[in-house]
Image 1 (cartoon, helix red, strand yellow):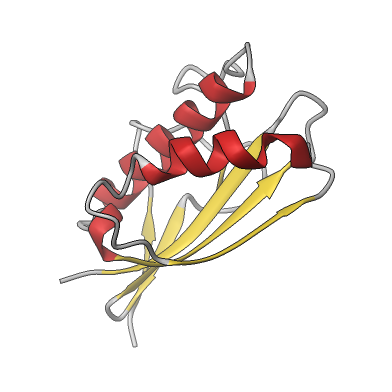
Image 2 (cartoon, rainbow, N blue to C red; image 1 turned 90 degrees about the vertical axis):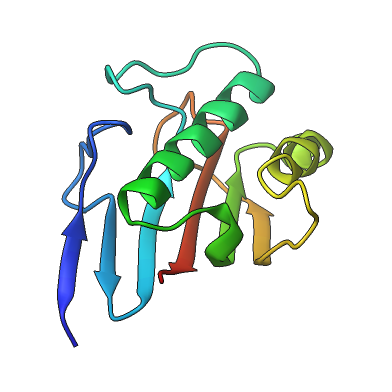
Length: 127
């Protein structure tokens, strides 16, 4: 099976030794997206702005991988604060307006940057 590294300037460039995504066969494995902007600035502000930026980054990497939210099979969401659970669900749902949600795991845990409030990774299929 071939392996292809996916990288797009429409999402923040990794600061760690990882790829934005890797395609293998008809699957794309997207690394954990965080609330950085494309100019490497942390999306400041409340949870809502960080969650929206994170989902925008995820969408950009999916698009660069020739797929989209409608082809996502599984997501993992990590919250810095469990009290953001309800808002996460509301904003997360906006990426699947038809309600055909992927499988998902979501939990609260410490994140690698003290100002991160959320991180989201996923696996999607391609055409």
